[in-house]
Every structure is written in structure tokens, then in C-alpha cells.
Amino acid sequence: MASLLSFGYWGTFVAPKASIPVSPHLRAALQLIVFALAAAALYFSGRHSWAAALIVAAVIDWGCVYVLKL
Picture 1 (cartoon, helix red, strand yellow):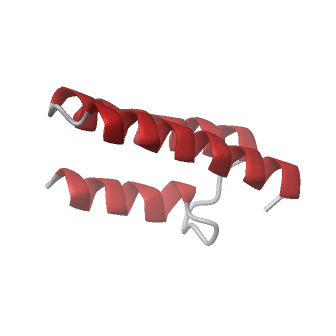
Picture 2: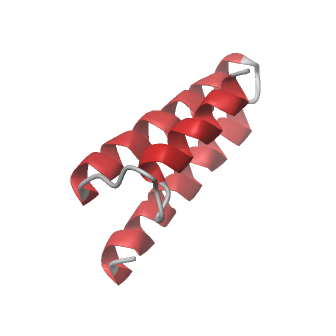
Picture 3: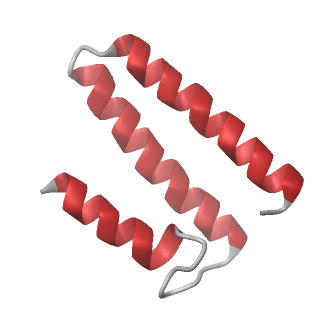
């Protein structure tokens, strides 16, 4: 159920061709919420290494997006 909600949330507000476009700063905040919740879910399910890897990947992604202005 949580996966379906996150898909709808992402497609509506965060995706590059979102049905409700938002400002870049709000988009970054919404992405932070999604990745933080996913990392927390991994961490609390005992997947500490995967949680850390997700955080590192998200930071690299955000850096590339904003440096390359995608």
C-alpha cells in the first residue's frame, strides 16, 4: 500500500513531467521526504547498509540534478 501511495505522490508532484508541477525548492523538499522515509524503513527493518547506500545515492542524485540543472 505504501508503495502505491509513494508512486502516486511522486508522479503527481515530484516527477519531471508531474501533473501538478511545483517549484524546484519544493520539489527538492518533497524528494527529501520520500528518500528519508525509504531510508528509515530500510534502517528499521534491519537493512542498515542499504539505508546508508540509499542516502548516498540520493545525495549524489540531488547534486547531479542541481549542478546539471536537470
